[in-house]
Amino acid sequence: PCQTFSYNNPNRKNDLIEVNMFIEIIEKINPKYYIMENVRGLFNILSWGTKELVDVKNFGVPQTRKRAIFTNLNYPNTSIIKNVKDVIDTTGFKYIFKSGNTHQNRKIRTKSVNGLCDTVTASDKIFLTNHEIISEKYGFNFDVPKQELTIEQYASLQGFPKDYKWHGGKSSVRRQIGNAVPPPLIKAFGEMI
Image (cartoon, rainbow, N blue to C red; front, side, top):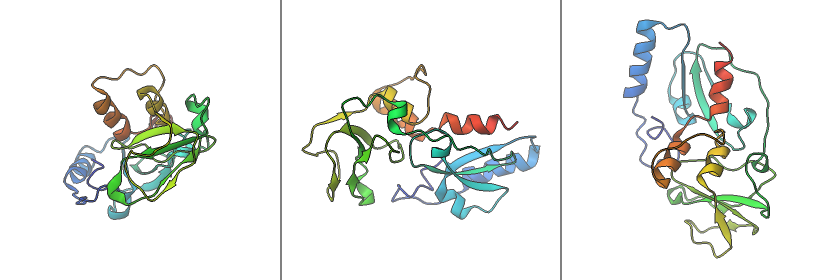
């Protein structure tokens, strides 16, 4: 449950009920392996087990997304860096940006498709454009030509394979993708077993 610890949530409560249930189960059954992933907000408030803050960009996911990992597995030593244009077709576009997370009072800035995009979240829309944006405005209404990413492109930025099957409407699927653990990250930990 990342929403309760996320810095993107202005109403976060740092409620550890579900996390404590996970810890209780792990301590009771003592499994050979366990892993828990969450936002870095949990990393800063939970003192339990072996934990590390990892950046998914080192696992081939082209975004700035730091995640708290609690596990008894060894931490993979990997540095597979991909940029946006490595995982989605950006033909005809120079920049990528996300828009819609208005409560953060964050400037909207484009980033080059030759680099990383901002963290893919459940609430933001992501666009490609040829116009550099550095704005004090918030929301979706920029007077520049832009193209919203398809669900397939959105999922590719999160590391999902192109043939992954999604169920639900566009908003529901975007929420599933934004809330997901990037598959290359969890795969790297799985390979440590």
